[in-house]
Structures are given as structure tokens and as C-alpha cells.
Image (cartoon, rainbow, N blue to C red; front, side):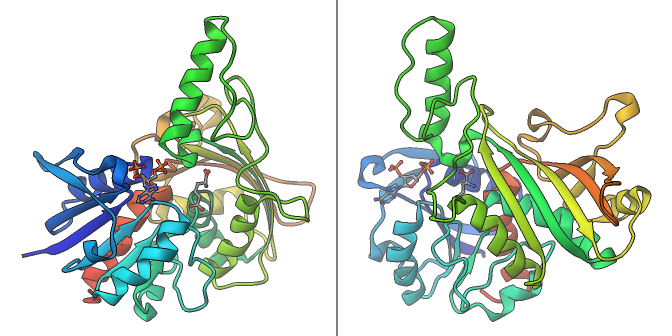
Length: 337
Ligand code: A2P
Ligand code: 11C
């Protein structure tokens, strides 16, 4: 009993976390199919005490697959997700390939679980910085209606994949050893001992694609085109855990106490907020955790109904693998697979 589950991009930073999450949450896996590039074919990865061999991704890989979790980049998703659907699989896609497609639901289970019901084969998993922000925004929005969000992110290198993690290690080692720093590859400028306000490509407007993802995905997930989002996305020398400084402007009044109360009841969120005892979340606290942590909740007196907060989430887990597995769990729960 159970499902045949494929992980596409199994050897990547998110793919490995997907395998771990399926195991930890005891998802009903009958058979696990691990797919990656030709380079990784034959490699073995652990799952529930066994070694599963990685296979080269091909259209035929999806024969007999019930659920396919994709995290191998947008190009692979565009090419292979339709192949998987053709063979009867439901695809949960972590890339940006289909997120804004009106025929594809974009789902965060704590926010818009009902959207899985109208899927036509593909369900998109939002960008990591969007996911951790909307789980916190949703209960506040329902209470006092958010008009505008100003957000600055502090994003970990693992968001850019396994090679970017190595890049931070190598550059840091070189700096500490007084050697020449290897040239940037995955991150556009030196990331060791630096901050880089450039994630994904630039558009003519001067905004980056990562920033526009936060603008557009937030509206789609929250079902509200009126929410204005003004983002600045920055890469910082952290391995795991994206942080976000968020300024919120509401239509109606909301106090710090009300916000804290709402967030302490919100699914997937944990309030870590006690400045008098120097308690607030940091990326190191969140790495490996499922919950999105929120702290530094305070009034913004420069606007009429304003709050400031600090949101920290594990970008590989809630930001990617966990959210995807939660979508799979929803499909099972609702009998949609
Ligand atoms: P591989 O390890 O064989 O290159 P990350 O986001 O950490 O960089 O991981 C990307 C994932 O996508 C890896 O599992 C990688 O496999 C996979 N991938 C990259 N290019 C291809 C491709 N052309 N076909 C299949 N999988 C790919
Ligand atoms: C980053 N947020 O931290 C990106 C990674 O659209 O799924 C995820 C990119 C995406 O670099």
C-alpha cells in the first residue's frame, strides 16, 4: 500500500531535503524513484535504511509514478513535467516554470489548501522567500487587511543550490587562509564576508526576478491582487535559513498583542519574541525546523496602522521540500491522487 513517488533533482540541495522529509513524515511511499542528470546515474542515496539508486531523468522514468516532486530547475520542469502528467503522475513543481500559469494552482497548505482541488496535473510550490512570508501574513491579513508590505530579505546561499553552498565554503576558507578568493560562479559577487543585493536576473525596471516573485506569488496565494509588495532581496553569507525584515501597513487597526495572539495560533508559525530576555529568531535557530519563526513584533508609529516584524524560515524545508511534501499529503487526504 502506498504511492510510487519520484524525486526529480534528487541529488540537489532541495532534492535531498525532499527525500529526508518524505522519510521523516512517514509519507506512504511504496516505491521511491530518484532522478537526476546523467552525471549522477548510479549514485546511491539513503531512504528508510536502504540505498536507492539514482537514475538518469528521461520521459519514460515516469511510467507507474503517482506523485513526482520536481526540483531540478525550470528548464527540466518545462520539459519533463508534461511527460510525467501524460503518464498519469501528479507533479508538484518547486521551480518557477508554472507558478504564474492561471491553470496551475500555487499552494501553501496553511494559506490556500483549497487550491489543490482544481489542479490539472501540475501544482506549483512557491519561492522560498514567498512561502515563509505568506504563512505569517495570512492570519494578519484576515484580521486587519494588509494594504502594503515592504520587505527586505537576507537569503541563505543554499537557496542557490548545492554548488552555492560549496562556493561560500571555498571563498570563506580562502579569505581566512589569506589566499586569492576563487571567482564567483553561482552567486554573482563574492559572498564570503559580503552581502549581494542581486538574486536571479535583473529586469529593465531595476528589480530582480526574485523580487518580482515575492510581488506576484503573494497576490496569487493570498487571492488578493490589492496587496502591494515592495521587496529588496539580498544574499547573505548564511548556509541555511532565509530572514526577512517586514513592514506591514493595514487597512484596520491591529495591536502588537493582537498580532502576537493571532500568530501564536497560526499553523506552521512559532512566535519567538521576547526582546527583554534577548529572544528573537535567527537562521541558526531555524535550520532543520518545520515552523516559520517570527519575532521583533513591534508597532510602526510612522504610519496609521503599521507593524514591523522579523520572519525566519528554513528555505530548504518550509521554503521548498516540506511545503512540497505537505502538498502531497493534502492530495492524499483529499483523495486527489
Ligand atoms: P545532478 O546532481 O546530476 O547535476 P541544485 O539545485 O542543488 O543545484 O540541484 C539541482 C538538481 O537538478 C540536481 O539533482 C541535478 O542533478 C539536477 N539536474 C541538473 N541538471 C539536470 C539535467 N539536465 N537533467 C536532470 N537533472 C538535472
Ligand atoms: C534563492 N529563492 O534563495 C531562491 C531559490 O524560484 O524556486 C528558489 C528559486 C525559485 O536563491
